[in-house]
Length: 140
Image (cartoon, rainbow, N blue to C red; front, side):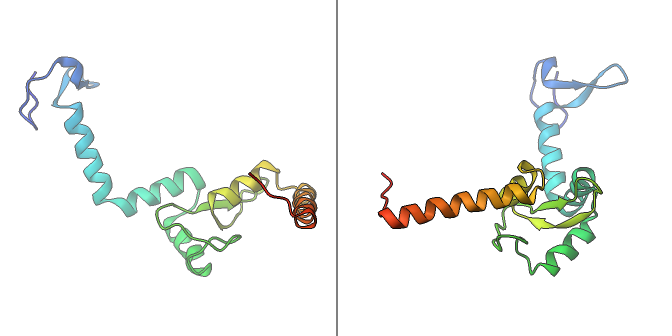
């Protein structure tokens, strides 16, 4: 088959099969390139749709939270401009809390939002940082 977009002669397996029972006129690679360009040209729309789908939050609400947090992660205060902030929410009520870095958000999830576990982890880290200072521990 010849792709109507790039003009190359390609095997049928390089074309998508439509629901109407025939092959589409542009090859898979041209279709991927077209979709990639569309996503780049409509980046804000795509971001908003992902936020709605994955986090049940609008782009406007996300931007409002980001502005309230002075464009930094709520817990650690950092910011990686190349990554989307994680939308933290209460797992029982689904209420959105704040925007976090993915590490802080995962830690909260891994300890199942249990403050007692967090305090135990804190105490453990303090215990071993004191030992390290007391014995001048050197890690190889």
